[in-house]
Length: 273
Image 1 (spheres, rainbow, N blue to C red):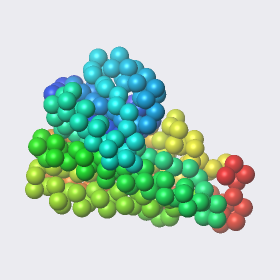
Image 2: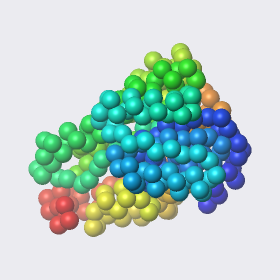
Image 3: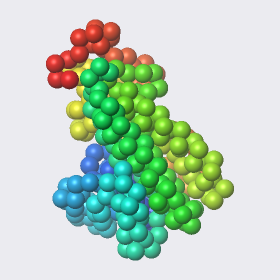
Image 4: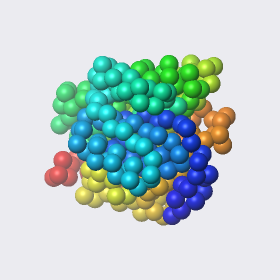
């Protein structure tokens, strides 16, 4: 599959600054790297500083760009405010924001604890609100752009995912509200809703033993490059009149997907749950 620099201008984001939560791994790492490969600078945040610093170093070496790691728990307003302050101190501004920090796991309704449900809501939904709240004045000043990372499972309902589905549905709503409220300041707000993305921790963690993806109309699972392409497009001037939109990147999977073995899978959950 073609890299982003084979499709978009190599210096598309020259002089731009990205702040990304969850940027140290998986989908959000590919999104961050795509921006840096096109001339941008980036600050990535998460709770695990060692892993974050390793990812920042690897991306800097791979791209020749500048990626900085800042430890922060998006559930804590003081942490995200500190991350924003350090980004501005280092680079002087914030042009782009990616809200990608997430927590997820498979859990039947009966086994999902009060604390587990609350934790996912706090990381995904509250974390998205907290970081955007902290960064919003800088995004407004630069007439920048925000991408919220969502998913598709809440579009039709899916077993064992009510906690994440509720959080992501809230994120989808925030995307629309922010597009309306921040639009007059020149800020665009969109979301990316990935389908099954191969070679990611998320897919390996969320796939049940009898799950399969043969029903994807395009005939393959997605890749992190697919998400990177979508990120570059949404941040670029090519999308300058697109705001409040959830871009589904799933090969039309959500239009046809169903849970293999339903309802038996609900009545007899896999042992790994």
